[in-house]
Length: 326
Image 1 (cartoon, rainbow, N blue to C red):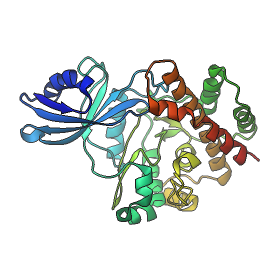
Image 2 (tube, rainbow, N blue to C red):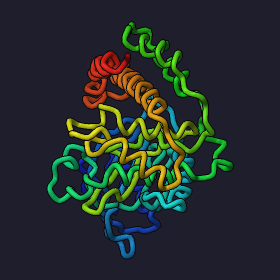
Image 3 (tube, rainbow, N blue to C red):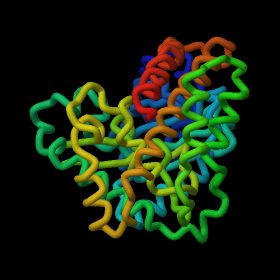
């Protein structure tokens, strides 16, 4: 097997092992690093060997992400369940949970053509129709996702999300008065509990592949868990994911369109107060994630300019919280 790679440190190990993963010798492949990611390294693999000729996506878990989440085997199960429910996802071709074959757990999946960079999605002329239907399509996809039976998903995390975020913040040892104000408000205004559903946990522009025809695939399932369906809907509406677009929903649509499509597809009615509570918690959670990702870089677990830049966004979330809180 021969490899031309933009990531020389991977060339040896990945070159030697991908042929075994794909079940072919004499495989010629080119690896191109697409992103560092918060918890995974992502590569485009162009391969040539009979029926394996084509383009694939390889994701390897990155050391020290600081976020926890589902492992490779669990994510493969979620992708299969979601595909059966009509949620657009890439087809998984191979995976390894132990990390012996490529140096870390990985998933190899089909390549889905389209755009993932939010700022390009917001501006590309050829994606105008996708932008117009974005909020409604997100509502329909999330309704299908939340309707997946949870009887066989008891292995998923179901920890209270506010308690988890508070533990993250308390464990940081850093003073953030805006975070404390938000925590007090969230505790005082918590909505009644509802039946828990499968929650994607990071459903937003950047984790969706978009083409002229709309959303083609939902990516990055490592934060999936069982929880309130309003969490996914509210996360999609956070200011952090609008990228200066005019709409509340990913910079491209309005909550009314999102919630109407969600309800028509079978999702439960989500009251404005519940949605807002989860928007506040989502903003707080994103601030805590920024804080944790910065510590991964500063602590030397994974040196990354991307993680350092994410850490600088903590102050943005503090400002957003102060603007949101009554």
